Image (cartoon, rainbow, N blue to C red; front, side):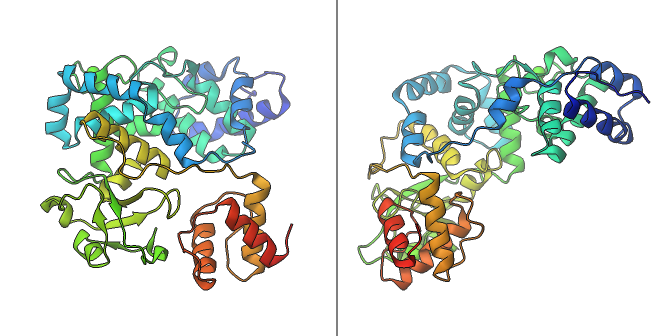
Length: 385
Ligand code: CA
């Protein structure tokens, strides 16, 4: 079989030749494969966007200030009232319209910013580049199947540099498994139909276990002597948290629906910042994008759309930590016998757990929050630079 591409890019053409039998084995017909791969060349825009590694971490408060804006709140409040599509979607899937509009706002600016790159070309570029080859090849095969079944021609399959498509920014495999025809015209058109897009988002959340009637999270307060090593820890009911002195920040009682749920306490900006009990619906939002900041952004926007005010405790001023600072802290924790995982500069669960254990052992507030002060203390104690 002749190589399906001759782009002149040796790495890309070698990948394409290697990919061809995999696609055939996955059920792509030879004529579809050769037609869609013909003349394909890597997209330099995709390669450069995929390679970005920011030197400084962006503090969560900066991100959320950029997400939860007055402009977005105004647009969302208007959409919430104007869109007749939303009532039937809420009834079918049990997901409140404010959450769906929050996702829509973050994924595509209420449908306005969808990305206009050829999804086949973007995914082929990512697959050839190799860092996420298995993922990209799977998504590429899912895209080829959408073309092969005739559901959409290739020119309709436009998306972001990472292959996320339409108003919901679904990757092709998510489109295949989860997109639905919300407006009843027989097509799952998440590009041009708001009804299809929002019903598809609701379907994703319903499949992720959305619990109708429960909150996504609540801002809470804790007593002054609270043990912050419980953050990102046990999932307990609001009654159990109340016994530890945790209360709703707005002073209201827990609803019956929330009382039945298990919730996790988090301090995203440390003990000095706002605290939240995260309900199962928060983790359903994270099926969309497994990021605490993202799910907080969606939920806080949704609260604004429903007319809730700002947080009771505002976000503190946070410092951006450099990659060197983050890796130094990780190497120090390792040197001191607390296992932070690979010192890669990514402050994930392992690093925060190790930091909490070290903070607790040193009599510090064990919130697992890496501040410049913590970096300095770790650097000094472990004598690492
Ligand atoms: Ca439709």
